Image: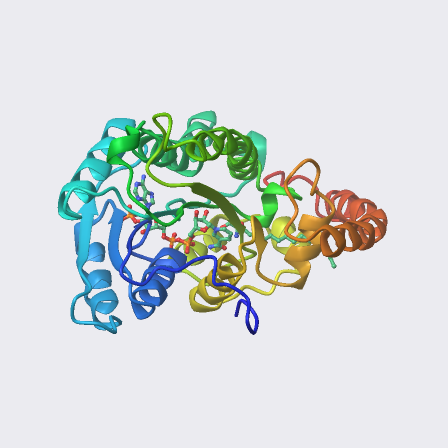
Length: 332
Ligand SMILES: NC(=O)C1=CN([C@@H]2O[C@H](COP(=O)(O)OP(=O)(O)OC[C@H]3O[C@@H](n4cnc5c(N)ncnc54)[C@H](OP(=O)(O)O)[C@@H]3O)[C@@H](O)[C@H]2O)C=CC1
Ligand SMILES: CCCCCCCCCCCCCCCC(=O)[C@@H](N)CO
């Protein structure tokens, strides 16, 4: 929770939330929990049958008969489809854009770089990076449109949330098709977290000048493994070496990941990790990102830099030893 007496920085009651990838895994768990907290929820994914089944469960999680639920089928690798989704949600939401957009769409196709066709690697960039960037673009174009001072209303902060992976901080052999796309999301998130301040600054003068309708905050969640249908699929493709190198990962349920992430959003955090190993992976890679807590994150980065003195050679050493013992993956 956000702590006794502290302010909840992520109020969703009576507000409208869009969750991409909301038909399965973590996205569906997030949708259920935000419905439990009183949000109106729109889930977006490609497969209609999965959307219908998920929406039933999400609707049943509602706590107030006034809450509304909707699904939209769209392939978010197509930017025009993301614009359509935002238009449809705005029309459904009585002309108001959504208050929260959470990008969860994506899946992982692991494999060694030279073994995975380059076309598949481009597709990973499309499904992981571009679904998020397209959704962010369509959303922010709506949110940041200038509103004349006479038409300004008092609106609460809007939230754009990306879902990354701790692999964006520390990549592992066998994730070449996937980690770069997640690292690109992290970079976009850092860029936007700075750029958005210009708009929030302009809004401080909204009584004199045209400005966006509400302040905007950016967040990014970095889960470890999530026990989802996507994960089951990924395990079938994953090289044995990759499984060995990620032994420190004890996958969490979608519900656990959603709960931890929402709690962190309620505390107002920016880069969100969901368990101890994830915190340490973040700590080694904080770089120029805004901190959640100056002291906490600085101590974490010191701890991590010590831990990683051992982890970096360990990962490389295990890869070397694997090749020495087992030969090439398909060399027989
Ligand atoms: N599972 C894991 O171990 C980890 C996952 N993550 C990330 O967390 C997020 C959720 O993962 P997970 O819970 O495994 O998800 P799942 O693989 O279980 O579900 C993925 C969701 O995304 C949708 N989706 C996929 N491609 C598109 C597309 N092109 N357009 C629209 N919707 C799409 C799927 O529906 P449909 O196929 O019908 O479109 C589905 O709703 C992802 O971003 C993933 O990369 C991060 C760390 C670990
Ligand atoms: C004490 C600190 C030690 C740190 C050791 C680092 C070990 C690496 C763990 C790799 C974990 C990968 C999780 C993300 C998985 C993911 O995103 C995919 N499953 C995609 O779906």
